[in-house]
Structure formats: structure tokens, C-alpha cells
Image (cartoon, rainbow, N blue to C red; front, top):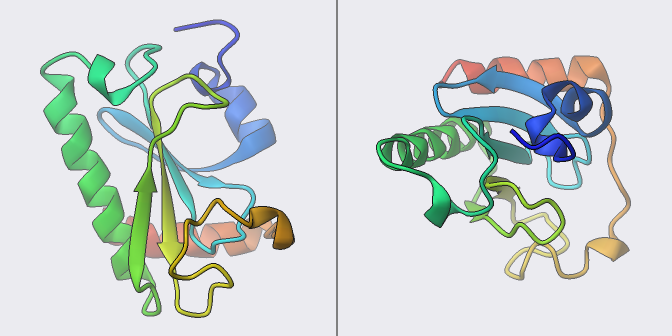
Length: 143
């Protein structure tokens, strides 16, 4: 693990950036604390500090992707109004292998467009601990 990587520091993640959902075999699942897209998740590779998907060593690569698929299915099953999921990996700001899982609804201001272009026009949404716990319970039913 890398000392100065926020995704390698689980405590810092939970304290400042994310709301924990579940530690899986190969990844850590969190809600992004900014819920402009209700239910937005972050799925982080947990075994070591690596930058991209292409860096995940075998045999973890296939099992990590299977877990990512399971997370996607659980999120979509947890809410009736999700039209599609945008699953993104970028690493532009935090160089640690992770995926943003963004639920898209027809009611989104940016529906049909890149979910990250135009975010500055949408106010940050911060939920209460109870609201996060309620969403967590919904998702855990499917994991």
C-alpha cells in the first residue's frame, strides 16, 4: 500500500470522502459522500496500490471484475428508477484502481450526456447518516 494514497488509507476514506458499504473479497465498496447522483458508488481495488485495471495481477483481475458486475447489478436492483449505470475508471485525481458507478435516471439534469460534464451546474448533495444507512441496506440485500 502507498502511504500518501487516500484509497490505501481506509480510515481517511471513511472520515472524509466516502460512506462504507461493504468490504468484498477484492474490493472496497463505498458511497461517494457527494450524492448528486443518488446511489453513486465507488469500488476500490484493495489488495495493493495499483493505478489501473490493466495492473491488477492474475488471479485477482477476473474476480475483481466479477465483483464489479455484482455491485452494478445490486445497485440497479436496489432502485426502481435507474435507467442505466455509467461505470467509469479514470484515475485522473487519485491514482489508484477504482471505479465510479453512477446511476442514471431520466430525471437527471444531465441524462443522456456524460455524467461528469456539467457537474459544476448541479449543487452538491450531502445525505444524513440515516439516508446512507437506508440506501446501504437496500444494496446489501442484493450483494
